[in-house]
Image 1 (cartoon, rainbow, N blue to C red):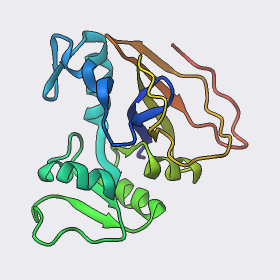
Image 2 (image 1 turned 180 degrees about the horizontal axis):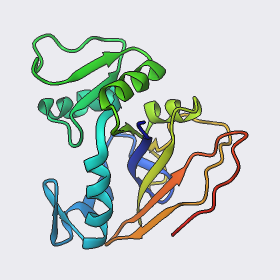
Image 3 (image 1 turned 90 degrees about the vertical axis):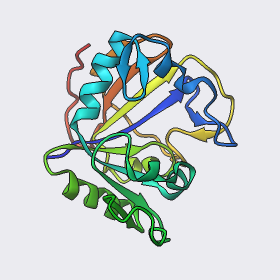
Length: 199
């Protein structure tokens, strides 16, 4: 069964971009190492954490804003084979018909579609407004944060507009890279006993 992982690079004060969608130094760690990862080079510790996570992802869930900003990565997602876009607008006419991109108008439906497409592989949900909605609905199993030592002060929040308290388990993965700290938490479900963390 798929694990649904909410993920993003984030500042220490909880922002994934500034108010103008600029990420500043949040992705510098992708190019400051010597081990190839995607189109960049990272520290060995980061590569050994990130690459296996990427390899397990079968589908991504993103918002329409991210799709529009990246042009959907020209039909080639950064990880996985399928992308589900939460949007009330359809896929742009004629846009990369060969790409497995699906447009769904609600978050719960988007996560369900992504799980169907991913099969036994994992689903990555982009943090921000869509990720925060999925998290608040109890659809997220794990929260993955790549924490970069920068303070933004304001901007786009990792958990979007979530305004209620939610508990996570202690991080079961803690990896120190170069200019980044990788953390992986399990979402705590009501009625489920706490699981011991392992570092």
